[in-house]
Length: 236
Length: 107
Image (cartoon, rainbow over all chains, first blue to last red; front, side, top):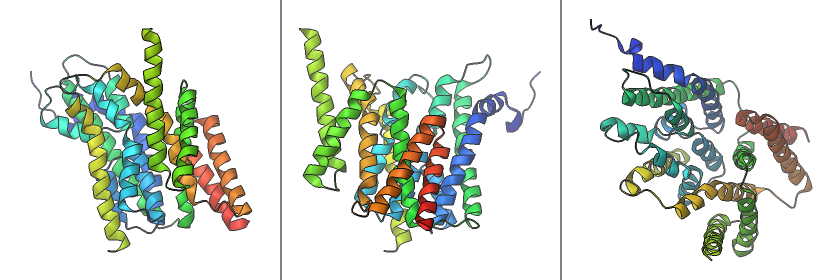
């Protein structure tokens, strides 16, 4: 006998919700922090909501607050956003098969592909009689909602907890330090870190404080050259 | 153009770029999967880019003012130390920033 289920009780929704609970807590916390920060930087509440709704990018949004505070220009903003989000470019590779033939939902799934959503999508287990595509969709949507709700709470809390604006720029430094440490601790990248150091020195010698693009260019070139020499040795 | 207007435009640009990075593999690798060299370079990109971004973020520090340098170095050390200890990004970022702010207010 077929029962008419409301959305709240559909098995796909329930499976997605259960899977997303860890992200619920994380996103509420980080979203709150973001809303708080942007509010303290003097921007209106709706900008935080706008950013969390359309960008849906934790690191990118944090970085944006730091850059707004420092008066970065559009070019710098664009470049930094690309660099901080570049890791997303490989997420889709492992999802190509999972997303095949999903139609309109695929567009939203691509849009909402955060680190955490990606992690959930690649590890959620398949259950009998449940439409996978709906589970994916609900996971992505729920994560998105958590993020926006967290932001909203943060923005409201921000009206009671002001922070000196200039000092907020340090959160950008802290964010990159955290990301770098995370990478370092994931292991096997010592050589790349050394290349980065070389690139930083070279870049600052060439361009002073505008070292971003030159350093990345030099670093990338070194990576590619070293990869070619390594594989050439293997061919011999 | 007001601060706010340029921020909104900035958000528009960032939205497009963020979406582009996410959609990239679905568009580019639709037919052919990427080769091993691309994958190796891609795997190394975060480790390359993050230290450079960190160096870039530190560029505004007034390196001639001893107390400012100390403030930044200590706060940064706290961020790194906290993160190695607890692996909690929220704790690390906010711990370090809080220290940075309080130090600035008190010293």
